[in-house]
Length: 490
Image 1 (cartoon, rainbow, N blue to C red):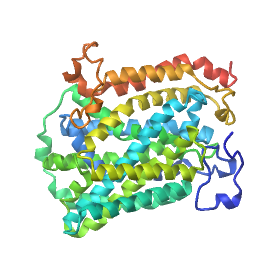
Image 2 (image 1 turned 180 degrees about the vertical axis):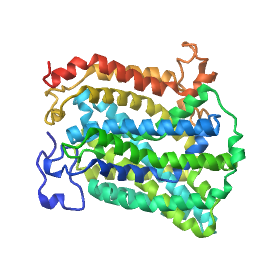
Image 3 (image 1 turned 120 degrees about the vertical axis):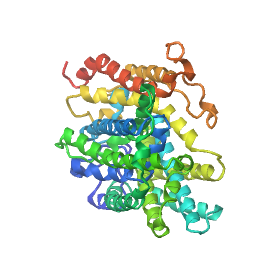
Image 4 (image 1 turned 180 degrees about the horizontal axis):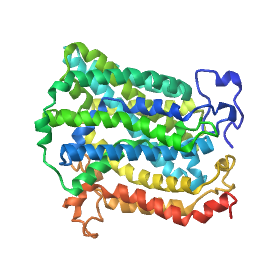
């Protein structure tokens, strides 16, 4: 069933470092409640960085009202989809990408697993970069040294915090997130109170409305940047849930924890950036540092501390799960070692971007939308698979290519490949200059009569929606009988 296959003794379970890897969590360890899911998701998404998404939403040419509607719908739906994936964690008590074997086959799961690992590595590195740059900017505002030495020390300290917490594992992370929730929440409220005077409602409401293509494009960006950016790890945090935990409550607490902070943060960001459009250019390079420039000096240090800790919190979730994904791909090492390997990659990526790259936010968003297409397809397949299943997973079969889930599920793999090809043809690289390597997308916009790469629909990023919905429908219809046979219902 797993590399160790044995139940951990009480002394090991009580230690500070989690030793569970990708094996199924033992019955006596499944003590978590649905409400426990609120803390990791809220703490990972309460970062002031969420306000900077207002600049990205406005970048699609939408009004304040349109942007607010897009934010509420996009954030809520995307985290609700995470909550549905989290149900699988309760049913199988294993990491997300191990549970994905039921849909893709024990060996076939490596196909979406590679994309999942890449997007997790990308997110955690991005958050570490944000924290490093924010430190340098705030130090400059304080009149302190903000040069190379400061960035090196900040990079080392931030990477160390992320790696140590992720190596410690689930129990330590859950305790850490519950503390960070209150700390970051309090300072975020303080930030809003201190900058509320910058809001000019008349200027905000004067922003012109955009067309339907702009609204759809902004919606897809919000969904991809928030819930869909986490969806491939959602079950990692519900695998300690008790067997009798309510599925609807798991979805509800996951959605509430993930969505409430981003909605409020983007809402205020829309007011602030709509009033101060001069902030937008700085946000594109250093979101948190730019937001700090309008604060009084006395609050800069607490702001920096909590902003960095919130980013670290999000990165910890990512690196913990990317380590589990690495194990699910067949890398035979202990879970803490997998987290450490990903931590080294994170550190090297942060160093390269902070010290050598000319621009990173554009290439990162280009990278995000590219990986967002196959991940959206995977999510559609998984959500359909979860909806079709009426019983808990066969835990032994998740680790046996000869078991009921088989080695390869060619329907799921074919669906993901086909939906990704379609999806990539319906999105374009919005950062053609900064990420020229990604200008190959959008090849179906012309043939399908959508105006080509320069048409209005090019900016709507329809490919993410298409991959998600098409994959769900095909899986729900094509694998219905197979899932029933796997569960002995036919």
